[in-house]
Amino acid sequence: MILNKINLIYSSERDQTADLLKGFAVLMMIQVHLMELFAKPEISVSLTGRISLFLGGPPAAPLFMAVMGYFLAQSKKNFSQNFKRGLILIFGGILLNIGMNLHLLILNVLGKVQVDPLKYIFGADILPLAGFSIILIAGIKWISKNKFYAMAVISFLIIILILFLQNSTRQHAITNEKLIYLQAFLWGNIEWSYFPFLPWAIYSLIGFFYRIIIELFEIENAYKDLLAITCAVISFITISYGINSSSNLMNYYHHDWIFTLWIIQFLILLVYVLNKLEELYGKNAFLIYVKWIGKNVTAVYVFQWLLIGNIATMLYRTQNEIALIFWFLTIIILTSFTVYFFEKRHDNKTD
Image 1 (cartoon, one colour):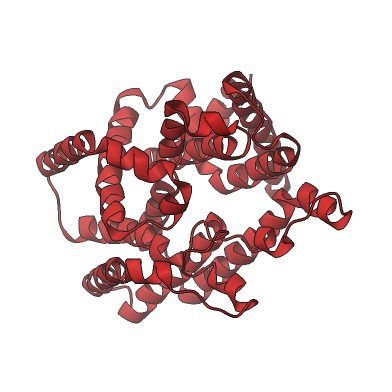
Image 2: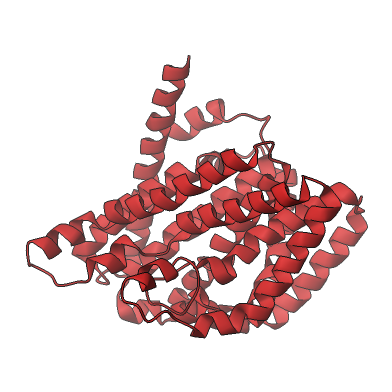
């Protein structure tokens, strides 16, 4: 029933491929959150677990960040508007950390568990990363005065700089006990720093740079096909490297420049494949549902974490494969209904 309703309210005037990419990315995030927090330890290290961690790796956060950067390139918002938006995401991410860990934090206050609450409150997740990345790109647009050639040069130089600094930023940490919680959002190989600004900002810059390039140069489809085929060959030959690098979570969150380049070429292939899927089957009801998720990606991301994070306190790493499928479907259904009624209520208020 909800699929039919979503088909009616999803606008065909939106960028279909972009919504499909965002929807696909957040679905991959949901399944990997369940694998990380719900699955028994032996499942996480099995082939199934490693594939799950891979699908929740390059096709998830890097893809989402690249799409965000793509749209920032064409955004008409000025620097102050984007700066404010970035701050909202940064502080919103901290509030989400409190919400998703509320059960655990209450148990800690009651003395039933012993954890460092600051590691959970100031965990550097993807929303703060998005906030810092928006501010960075807004700064590039402001400095370059929205001139495409200047934006292309500046963003390309920053991409090269991040690649150059990537290994060194993984090793250097602030020794101050308080400042380290701030550093976790910016750089360093810190346990609760899942998506530090360096190197993760590079993926939004890649999307930003790509959008500028296609604005400056008309790239023929034959060249896009050739690039996708090249990336397909590279991905096929090196897929074991991609899976192994993604399934070690600390290495994934704090990966080196080589794996960054691997992710970039994989994203080129993935975007190409999903775009072809949209061209061929874009009117399929399930794909429309995925695109609707992509349209509401922030709300979906927030609600799924509020559910998964608080349930995980009770079920941490105890669930088998069948239970994981059950929880995936349950989280998807509950999140979809919540977002649907949240969106419907918002639309009614604006009428």
